[in-house]
Structure formats: structure tokens, C-alpha cells
Image (cartoon, rainbow, N blue to C red; front, side, top):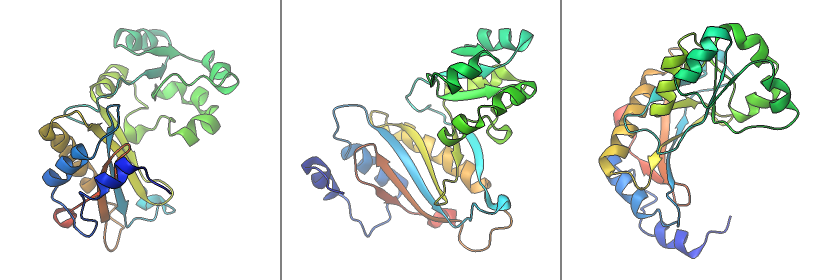
Length: 230
């Protein structure tokens, strides 16, 4: 993959052989975020897990103290009193069966997170084939299948992010914007790493976290020291 001049200049600031402390890594990521828009800062964590085994799957959510810097649109599948509660809590969209054809046939995806009450999962399950590949399927482990829709919506709007293994056993999570203060990005990073460290599968033998990298949307990756998490 060919990189532009700006990327190449940024990459010169980073020692590829070095693992940086989080404080240094955050500074470098902010320094190398040269795009004309406010780039998202992402953490990529390569794990020693094998996601093909159910007991080594990692999935959960954490509320970042300073949010992600992104306005998140929440769709809630609920009915009756719970639907009214969801509207009152600030859900962007609330509905039930009537949303199935809109999403399935019309390709409507003007939302970032889906929450559902347990009694609506039969309805939502019909959308598994379209929501699943986009990572939008509600899940109890992520707190998005719940009767407490107010808490779910408040947490998401406050900066709750999901983490999960991809097919290569890597976790990718946004922790804020390049415009954030260093301290805000660091606190978000610490909150995420604390949650992921606690999520270590008990059945895992060997190294849990193999490598950690921080990067901005258009910038090069900066390796972060994993020693404290081993």
C-alpha cells in the first residue's frame, strides 16, 4: 500500500522498533495526525486468544470517561412503556416490527448502536444477517439487551464503546479524537485497557496481549509497551 508524503513524514517521527509508554505514544499520535479533519484515535490490540473457541471469545463494553468525541445515534427496539421510556431517555429511533422492512429491504442504517429489550429479541433476530456483519447486533455482554433502556442509552451517549475479537483475534476500539487533551486520551486508554485486562479468558494459556498500537485515522501506528499487562 502506497502512502502519501504527509504519512511518510509522520512515520519518520516514530521508531518502529520501540514500544513507547502510553504518554509518549499519545503525544506521537497527536503529533502525526495531520489530516484536515479531526482524526479518530484507535487502539489495536493483538491477542493470544483463539476466537474459534467459545471460551476464548472476548466481548464486552466500557464507558470511556471522556467519551469518543462522536455523536452516537441509538436505535431501540422496545414496545409499550419501554418504548416510551426509551424516547424519554433520548433514543434517536424507537420501534418494533415496522422497522424490519425498512432495515432489511430499504437498507436504512442511520444509527450507530442498537439496543433491545429481551422480549424484542425475537424481532431483532430476524435482522441477524444484516446487523451481524456490521457489528450492530444487540448482545447481553455488551449491555445492549436489557430492560434498563434508560441506563443503556445514557451509557452509550456518555461514551460507551464495545470491544470484541475480530477474525484475526485483534481488538479495535476508538478512544477519542486527535483534538482531545493528552490527559483525556490517556484516561480513556487506561479505562479500556483495565476492562480488557479483566476480560482475560481463564482457559487461555500463554500470552494474552501480544501487542498494542495507537494510531489516528490517517496516521502511522505507534507501538505501546505491553509489559504492564503481561
